[in-house]
Amino acid sequence: MPVAREVMAHALGKPDEIAVRSPERQLSYAALADDIEAGAVALRRHDALRGQDAVRGRDVRGDQIVAVDLAEPADTLAAILACDLAGVIPLVCDAAWETPRKAEILDVIRPALHLSTWPPPGAPRPGVPGGGGARASWRRSGADEWGAAAPHDLAWAGFSSGSTGRPRAIVRTRASWTESYPAAVALSGMDETDSVLVPGPLASSLFCFAALHGLATGARVIATGAWSARTARDVVWDADIMHGVPHMIDVMVTELERASGGGQQDSDAASGEGVVAGRAATAGQAAPAGTAGRARRPRMAMVSGAATPEGLRERAARVGVDVVAYYGAVELSFVAVDPDGAGMRPFHGVEIDVRPVDQDSGLGEVWVRSPWVAEGYLAGASGPFRTDDAGWATVGDLADLAPTPAPMIMNTKRLHRSISVHDHRDVERDIGVGELRLRGRGDGAVLTGGATVIPEDVETVLRAVPGISDVAVVGMPHGTLGAVVTAVIEPASESIPRARLEEAAREGLAWAQRPRRWFEVDRMPRTSTGKPARAAISAGLASGDRAVRPLR
Image (cartoon, rainbow, N blue to C red; front, top):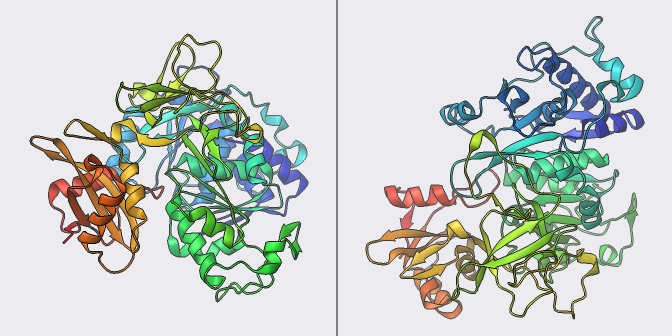
């Protein structure tokens, strides 16, 4: 969530400390504050936005929105924070979108300004006489001259499409992110001495939250922009905390394993000896070429966006990295967290209600009530985000129903099984509190011959087969069954025999879950956040794309 005022306070206290490092820029907190205030001055001067105060209404108009469409991550962060200071809503776009698609999406929302260059036209030039006084203002009094920020300001908008579908813009209040910061800090242990690696596009709320939270804390943010395995393998050595989806964390853990001689943790690091700036150091470990002499290596991985693969937590631990897995959505923010491998439990302040979807499946739809839920979609868009009159919200994700009744949520008239509200640090494992066992998005399920198959269940089994880099499961249309379960495999190196995969499916999956069609790709199509792009995969299968080959 935009935190311009916190950034300016850090700039006053430690102006020369690095705030953001990105592919093309490195900004100190002072330089970032200069960029923010100069941008805010230009936005206030813009005709379509002139006179806008902090946005507090719920009927969002186009003249309150600035589309932030910048490829450089440091510029994107400065623009988001400039919008915050100017009292307008930044709508964070994906720079990877092709121009026609971008135009189609923005034509629906009709923002007052499409910001595609930085600094914006009319921005004061720091250090130039008569340049508008942007440098002087924050240096005199921080952000005081810009007025206070209110928790209920509508202060951020971004896009949600998950791994399927067309992007929808969602808007949220300042407090729906910023007031969750203390609980997030309790999970990661982040403080202002840390370097935080954000290895994906800021159009993703996962990465935008991570970057803005890091800046609010006064940490150094390493923002790579679009995901690149090569870049991540290099910059991981400069990070204390890394964020990502499981695929990204796996790449970075593999790099740490390679440098550590196959994943055996150095005895000094394992014992906590050898401390640099209060953190466990790795003085005795081997480092790859170009990393010798670096004091840092990650101690924490925050992973979300998909199920954490079996064994990833243990592999990370062997190279000195703790893993905190969490579940959330753009519309819901944090929902549940697994800090120790014992299962997902409600995030601080969250109530979870798993409502049965039918009598026979054993699955329920996850409903959430918390302070972190977003306000809704922009421009009247429809999507999976739904609410009820009692303040509960869902995006259609499915989970197992509790095998035994968990404590009931108070103040509801529903009598189905649910998960109680608690902080994960206070969980007593012997009192029967339910764990959240996620089974994927309801609208991604494959309906085949009357059975409902959750792709993530099948993917979990197949990913355990040696030689598989990744797998995506989708449904292909079938004349009598409705759809058939279809697996698309990305091998780690050599092609994997279909017979080996079918054997694993027979051993680990029920009859209806077993893929009937098998395909292979050299490189899995992915969304900008690193997830398998199910829509692109399904389209490739339907079109007979030559890149998708039948597996023999």
